[in-house]
Image 1: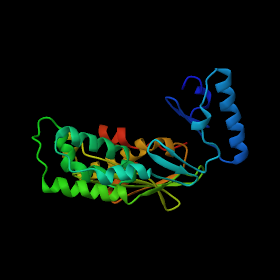
Image 2 (image 1 turned 30 degrees about the horizontal axis):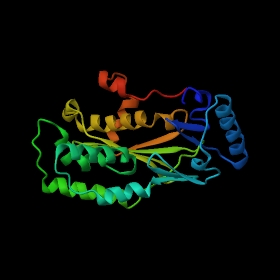
Image 3 (image 1 turned 90 degrees about the vertical axis):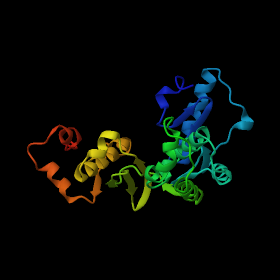
Image 4 (image 1 turned 180 degrees about the horizontal axis):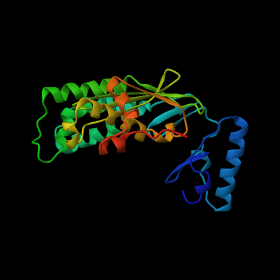
Length: 253
């Protein structure tokens, strides 16, 4: 199906196996897009069951999310699943829960640092023991996700703001536009990063944000905020060691 719609992927259509989502900026544009998509289906002799088709929606449930004109939220059905999830009793059940929460991590600030206690239980070399700290982080993430966090959709042509923070437990970043949160992202430190001095960790957080959201930020104007003033030297120092040279953002022409 992806091959059939290849010229139009991510410009007017999203395809996953046999699910097709057509999106547009206006009703007039949507009518044109529908003609294109239905025309391709007809030409390729592919059929869509009419009873399973929905047209002219202003809000649509897709891939566990509910997407509308200006925002995206977690599908209420998934929230119900999270509410009913009981305390994991084995490594495999922890992995299932980690998988579900990781899918929605863009909705949760500092996900990695909160989940550290029970993500460690997915490692084979660590004996399974559900501690009080595991339960606290488990309930905290359930609460965060089930309060239906709302993310705004990015507006083309508008400036972005990126907030970065780092500690010896992980990296956390926030992408915003027009004072609205577009996405959260976080990750735990890699083994070699645990020996980094503070200013290198803060720089790693900036690089992490710019890489993970490059599809939003490339070609757009953005401001990056970090709480470590010493990072200013990266843009003025003539001689940088290898890690800094690899990390320093290249100025745009």
